Length: 134
Image 1 (cartoon, rainbow, N blue to C red):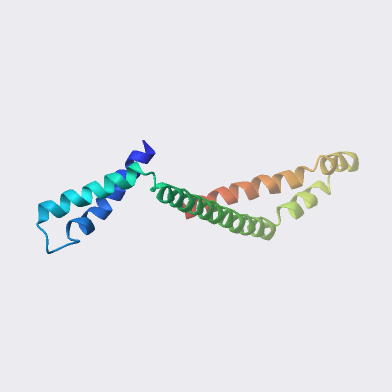
Image 2 (image 1 turned 180 degrees about the vertical axis):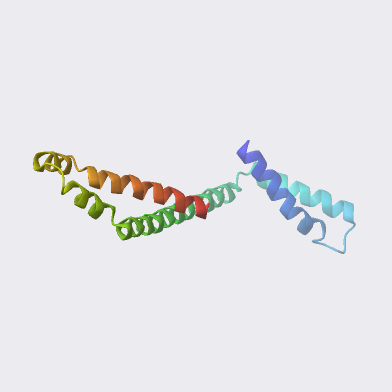
């Protein structure tokens, strides 16, 4: 199915060039000759370079798309981490845990709950920022 659509696209793009290629002959003769040349070209399987070029261009477009998504993700992550660090949530949690029993505070820090809260807020910020770019 992919190959057929490529063939139809190629014929549609090259058709005007074949029709108006020779102005000295009659239009019908030129058209029939040129259609025969196109059919022979597809029968000889010399159109494989076009298929290969289409695959390469598709690969380049997909790689460019992925690289742009990664760039936007890294930018969003840096922005979100900056916002979370500016808010000082870890420092606020540490200050609040200063009034708690030392064993409980040590257990909470051992579980890395403040870092987990920062990670969750950074992920939410990245999601919000990437939503703005989409």
